Amino acid sequence: MKKRIFSGAQPTGELHIGNYLGALKNWVALQDEYESFFCIVNLHAVTLPQKPEVLKQKSLDLARIYLASGINPEKSTVFIQSDVSEHAELAWILSCVARMGELERMTQFKDKGKGNAERAGVGLFTYPILMAADILLYQTDLVPVGQDQKQHLELTRDLATRFNRDFGETFVVPEPFIPPIGANILSLQEPTKKMSKSDENANGSIFLLDDADTITKKFKKAVTDSGTEITFDESRPAIKNLLTIYQLMTGKTAEECEANFVGKGYGHFKTETAEAVIEFLKPFQQRVKDYSDEDLREILKTGAAKARAIARETLTDVYAKMGIVGAAN
Ligand code: ATP
Ligand code: LTN
Image (cartoon, rainbow, N blue to C red; front, top):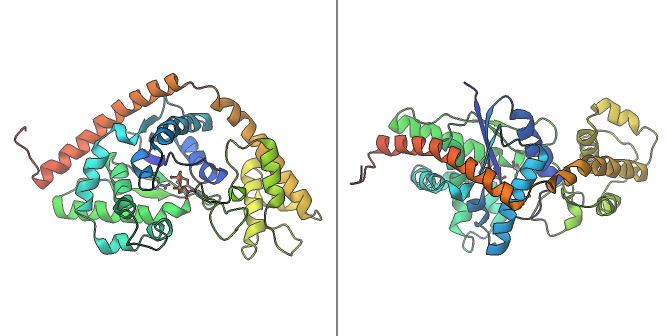
């Protein structure tokens, strides 16, 4: 039996190269070796206000991006979270297992709630519980995500372990898969922060659907430092970040990347990095056009049916273990 992976992204904003390098690229690489589930987490999206029509379209568009990235629907299960209501059901159960204190320690809530707990939505606070439900429903072994999700994975592990202890062996306790390079791509404008879909400054992020001109301009405007050397130096995050992007886009080794820029200036470095990204994105942007909304809906329907069968099995076991039995059964 193959081991399982589960991961997901929110159908909000535009996906950027950070999402691709930190997450999607690894989903594609792992899908042959693992039985894979890739979810479009639209229930997570509404933890912040969304326009209904936009959310609907973005959910399909994200499926398109998954496929164009190389997710093969013949091998992997691709589906929309709200099509499998077991996610919301298990989230309720896990909200009775989780503790306020452990959720209060989640840094994403502090960031996205802008430090104002009084005004923040309760869904934003309980967001990691829904994420735990996503993962645990599928008896997931491995969760490929970027660095920013590490804390949520730890909570997921704690909830699974606690439930297993209190009610008997029920959930597989999942491991995170965080890539050694690319798990935290930084903003081109503020290279102390991660590249983010929700960044107000679009110049900080290279979106997967940006055209060549825009990409060149964004790299030209990228913040650097007052140094001259182009090396992977921890103490110079802006340069290290650009070099990491160059490395992952070209597939060169770290040594080859540094050697390539010896004696070259930042201007040249930025242009060459922009070109590498443009070249890399070209076939991807072509593939995005290959899928019609109808094709996608078919793939997502098939995916939801497969996902639901597994999710129901886990939830039935959870209810039985907890003595949650209605009059109907
Ligand atoms: P954002 O913070 O950009 O608004 P998000 O974290 O809510 O977005 P999702 O689309 O849900 O974004 O994330 C999808 C995946 O991309 C997650 O596994 C996340 O860890 C990863 N990811 C997001 N930003 C980065 C980044 N800057 N570098 C590497 N991986 C990232
Ligand atoms: N919280 C994640 C998205 C997400 C997810 C998941 C990732 C929701 N459920 C389950 C992995 C597994 C984020 O990237 N913001």
